[in-house]
Length: 144
Image (cartoon, rainbow, N blue to C red; front, side):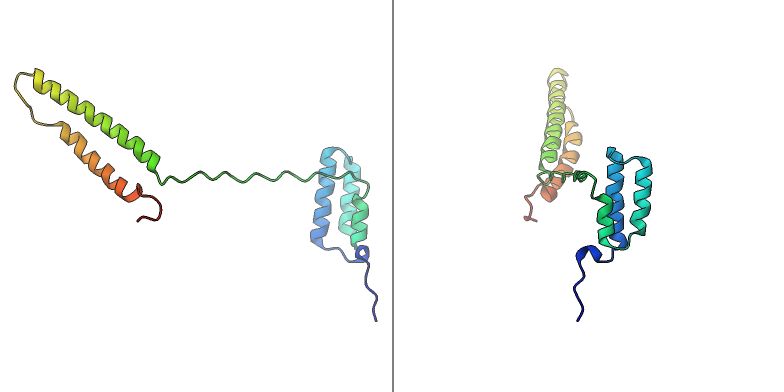
């Protein structure tokens, strides 16, 4: 019957050695180890056979604070492009109204009566495109 192996006598893996090396690097960066001690301990880390030998290499070091985790990005509320469509509609309506006002002033003050309604050539194509976009994108999610 075999006896259980104590945790400190278990063989160390390369992943565990890498973790100890990172701890030593942080301790060196914080000033707990000078360059000579850091080099010696890194060499000893990769020569260590057991977990106990690895633990002894960092036992006298202060607790190294883990690097702060990046905060997850804040997800913006999806409006389905409705805000952009409102802005575009406002711009289109303003330009169309301005063109209509200019046409109306030219028609009234020009003395020739009503002139060709040229403002429609500006308002209708862009209004049609905007209307189609509103139909396709402007709906609430799940209404397609």
